[in-house]
Image (cartoon, rainbow, N blue to C red; front, top):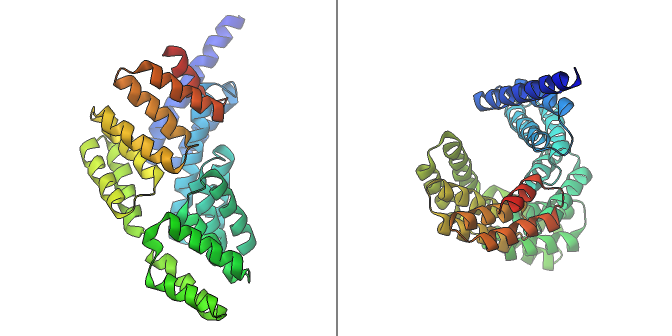
Length: 305
């Protein structure tokens, strides 16, 4: 009887996971969350199914947060972002999104904490460093704020605009009010065009139009070259159209910026596998496990290599 009960559990687990994916693909995000939560109730905590379920729960909450922000429902958006972070605490973009929301709601200190977390996860996260600098300056931490802003410009030369130069000049002359005004205008000159191409590329990739996805990601990178997430997505798209060598180069670009980018490390290994270089692939999987010993995908790929 115990064996039969176990088989039923596996069947229910598989059904819930399939339902979750179906709901997620259809944009039925709350239904997807419920289905994947049912997977977590049945699966062992470190199983591949549980890890993937947590990932999709986090992604669903992140998308729900975006929808609520667009409707002006900021409290709901914050709740969904915090739920997303519970499931995926090592995603710097989630902490940055929460920081933006908290800043918009006037919670400056909490916002700065989230920005610091995102920067710990990705030390070259220029957008987060810039925002931390602006908020620090706004809080009266003029020296620290100007330092963060200067560091952001070093990482992302596109921030080296007239507002920044004039702001630094005002800072040096002691005109902190004028400097703050100029620094606060810098994010409006942010790389929204990059975000646009990135989001379009993601949608094209998920729809299976990999050639068009490659074009979108390449357009995004042509506007700014220090974005490991874009390089990783471009690499995935290139692998999908059977160009592993080009894909490998993109993953390496991502790792040059963020050496601890687990997704890019594993993907570099997959690209090596596609090129028939199994020893190098195994080295990437071992590198991923050194950073994240519990990573199921890296462990399974290493065992198969």
